Amino acid sequence: MESELISTLNNISSKEGVKGVLVSDETGLCLGVRGIARPESAAFITSIAKMASNIQRVEADKLEYPTINLEYENNQVIIRNEGTFTLAIFM
Image 1 (tube, rainbow, N blue to C red):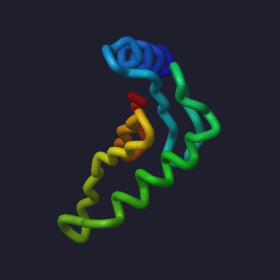
Image 2: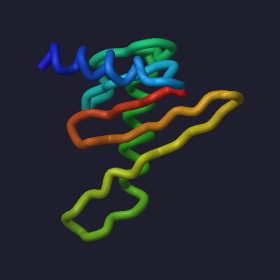
Image 3: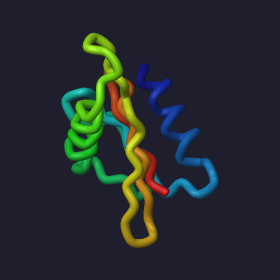
Protein backbone atom coordinates (compact mmCIF):
# COMPACT_ATOMS: atom_id res chain seq x y z
CA MET A 1 0.00 0.00 0.00
CA GLU A 2 2.85 2.38 0.76
CA SER A 3 4.19 2.24 -2.78
CA GLU A 4 0.69 2.88 -4.15
CA LEU A 5 0.33 5.91 -1.86
CA ILE A 6 3.71 7.29 -2.90
CA SER A 7 2.86 6.75 -6.56
CA THR A 8 -0.50 8.52 -6.15
CA LEU A 9 1.09 11.48 -4.33
CA ASN A 10 3.76 11.81 -7.02
CA ASN A 11 1.24 11.49 -9.84
CA ILE A 12 -1.13 14.14 -8.47
CA SER A 13 1.63 16.55 -7.46
CA SER A 14 3.11 16.44 -10.97
CA LYS A 15 -0.11 17.70 -12.58
CA GLU A 16 -0.14 21.23 -13.98
CA GLY A 17 -1.31 23.82 -11.46
CA VAL A 18 -0.94 21.56 -8.41
CA LYS A 19 1.15 23.16 -5.67
CA GLY A 20 0.74 20.46 -3.05
CA VAL A 21 -1.03 17.25 -2.04
CA LEU A 22 -1.92 15.79 1.35
CA VAL A 23 -3.41 12.41 2.26
CA SER A 24 -4.60 11.59 5.77
CA ASP A 25 -6.35 8.65 7.39
CA GLU A 26 -9.80 8.75 9.01
CA THR A 27 -8.32 9.90 12.34
CA GLY A 28 -6.45 12.82 10.78
CA LEU A 29 -3.01 11.20 10.80
CA CYS A 30 -0.94 12.45 7.89
CA LEU A 31 -0.05 9.60 5.52
CA GLY A 32 1.90 11.69 3.02
CA VAL A 33 2.48 15.17 1.60
CA ARG A 34 4.03 16.79 -1.42
CA GLY A 35 4.73 20.43 -2.27
CA ILE A 36 3.32 23.21 -0.09
CA ALA A 37 1.00 20.92 1.91
CA ARG A 38 1.94 20.75 5.61
CA PRO A 39 1.62 17.53 7.64
CA GLU A 40 0.35 19.46 10.67
CA SER A 41 -2.77 20.48 8.73
CA ALA A 42 -3.88 16.85 8.18
CA ALA A 43 -6.18 16.67 11.24
CA PHE A 44 -7.81 20.00 10.37
CA ILE A 45 -8.40 18.96 6.75
CA THR A 46 -9.86 15.61 7.83
CA SER A 47 -12.17 17.41 10.25
CA ILE A 48 -13.44 19.73 7.51
CA ALA A 49 -14.18 16.74 5.27
CA LYS A 50 -16.03 14.87 8.03
CA MET A 51 -18.13 17.88 8.99
CA ALA A 52 -19.08 18.53 5.37
CA SER A 53 -20.32 14.95 5.01
CA ASN A 54 -22.76 15.60 7.87
CA ILE A 55 -24.44 18.53 6.11
CA GLN A 56 -26.67 16.38 3.94
CA ARG A 57 -27.38 12.68 3.78
CA VAL A 58 -29.23 11.30 0.79
CA GLU A 59 -30.62 8.36 2.74
CA ALA A 60 -30.39 7.47 6.43
CA ASP A 61 -27.96 4.61 5.78
CA LYS A 62 -26.05 6.12 2.85
CA LEU A 63 -23.25 8.58 3.46
CA GLU A 64 -22.35 11.03 0.70
CA TYR A 65 -18.81 12.36 0.49
CA PRO A 66 -18.90 15.93 -0.80
CA THR A 67 -16.01 17.73 -2.44
CA ILE A 68 -15.02 20.89 -0.56
CA ASN A 69 -13.42 23.82 -2.36
CA LEU A 70 -11.65 26.38 -0.15
CA GLU A 71 -10.33 29.57 -1.68
CA TYR A 72 -8.02 32.06 0.01
CA GLU A 73 -5.80 34.80 -1.38
CA ASN A 74 -4.47 33.32 -4.64
CA ASN A 75 -4.77 29.71 -3.51
CA GLN A 76 -7.36 26.98 -3.65
CA VAL A 77 -7.64 23.71 -1.71
CA ILE A 78 -9.87 20.91 -2.92
CA ILE A 79 -10.73 18.41 -0.16
CA ARG A 80 -12.39 15.06 -0.69
CA ASN A 81 -13.07 12.35 1.90
CA GLU A 82 -13.30 8.80 0.62
CA GLY A 83 -14.21 7.07 3.89
CA THR A 84 -10.87 5.64 5.00
CA PHE A 85 -8.76 8.54 3.80
CA THR A 86 -8.98 12.24 2.95
CA LEU A 87 -7.26 13.87 -0.01
CA ALA A 88 -6.41 17.58 -0.22
CA ILE A 89 -5.05 19.14 -3.40
CA PHE A 90 -3.52 22.61 -3.14
CA MET A 91 -3.71 24.68 -6.32
